[in-house]
Image 1: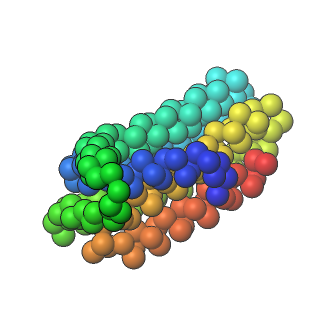
Image 2: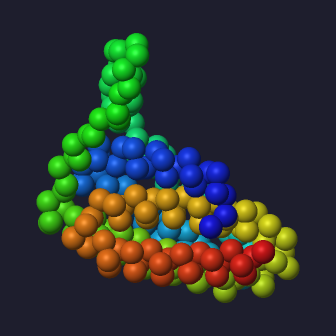
Length: 201
């Protein structure tokens, strides 16, 4: 994946605070991004020679909005985990000479199986809708290239590839009971994103 530095930073955030969110919040966040993707696909499908100047910029803007929304959700996942860092600092500064091993934290209680399945179902819905969007964007490449919109779309797709990969990886860690199917969905989405990025490069 591209944007290694951005992806590494976001993955650290997602991993740090993933347990702070309720399953309902995770599902709602995924569904919001799914709706944004569906709305963007609806706009992209309309693009033709007569209206490209109206709709192509909207597609680029919506892709940027998806990136911003996903990035915000990843940051939100880390917000409530700062207390652990403070406790570690307190422990390290307690003694002057003795060596202190990092303490093992208790893993947060996992979501119920029903909650995990709800997250997996929401993620699968997102993957299906997002794959449809990417297929549409790939199909419009020739027209968008002729009209000078390929560059901004390509930049948005590269950013999208990075943040969606981080979000998907964070979600998979939340759902051990359906992690295998979620991983398969993520891999399929990774391929679609890579195809879209390669098409516009």
